[in-house]
Length: 499
Image 1 (cartoon, helix red, strand yellow):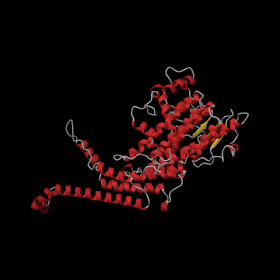
Image 2 (image 1 turned 180 degrees about the vertical axis):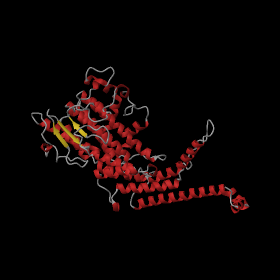
Image 3 (image 1 turned 60 degrees about the vertical axis):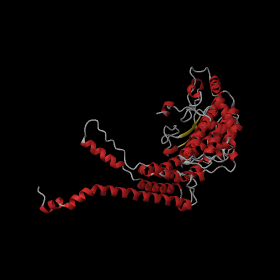
Image 4 (image 1 turned 90 degrees about the vertical axis):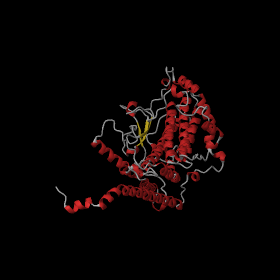
């Protein structure tokens, strides 16, 4: 097909040639204008977000939010014992991997309590010990440095009312998270030590280690909680439930110790901590915004190396992939502002009134949000994902507390009864051992309870799938029930827990 004369003359004209020669420069100019324009747009929206939060009374600077404790003596992380443990690498750390026990023994079970079968400590060592007591004494001896460190830290943990997370200059999120995770390791070590003391019949020292675990959970929940501390508290509380259960199975607790455990459980407020934890996210906004602007790469990394010639189809796919990777920091920042506002709308009620707790309905809504959430749009907050996580963790911790308190009440009832039997229903525990029959935090009425044919009780919550699985232990966070059991489950082995 021949071009019309007028079009041919237009293409051959001097003006067209000049325009074609200048087009690359014009394109570059447009790219630069686009970059700086969107950069200005993103920065202005981020600044407006910070101003709005400050006007609402929130703190957007971590140094102001995690301010020093009014009394330095009350700050766990300023205590000389903790400082020595924290800074001196020569000292034995209180968590697996830094003690000899890591190479000598397997950890405590990390899933549900082990199907009402007492933990066999004799198989923890190689070669296996003759009995549990011999194994526990051997492990305690090897674990002596960690035991001594825990004994030193226990009074510090107990009296620390304000744990002010240290905030660094380079990465505020990491500097806040590190001591929180450090506390988690302390709780893990206390759990191991408690079981060893139970196996040797020293219930007082075992109970002291359990109280240290409770202090760790309290410190993670009370002083300026954040999503990371909620995660750590969720794990630590679950570990505490396992150790208390282990003592019940071994008959290692007396009534006074059980009462103290129940008192510590009732003092915990995981719902309040989870609802308030978004304040910790807000406190990191200014530093997170600055970090984002300094670290974001504008242009994608393009690999132009071709070992054997050029494949046009491959080149086209690479070009499309590079185009998808092209990111304007300004637009991403503006998208992050939008994500943070949506995060706040989910975490707080309209008009700025904060929620009192997360409900199963909230959890279901947050999970639906996760299904349509764009993970690349949430750079100032993790958006729907932490809301679903926070709601799940809060409800799960509430369930663990309710189940454990019920288990403690059942054991106290058995200890008080001359016949050593358990009640036919949970109503028999009220009001002597419980103020009321605990409800299932996952919104399905009271906790499930049955007295099995062998006279042993079973208590459970339906868990995060909102389905009553008949008291079968959970395999994943969204399958099975949260349980307190005192008997093996027919046809259900520990291998089922680890599928």
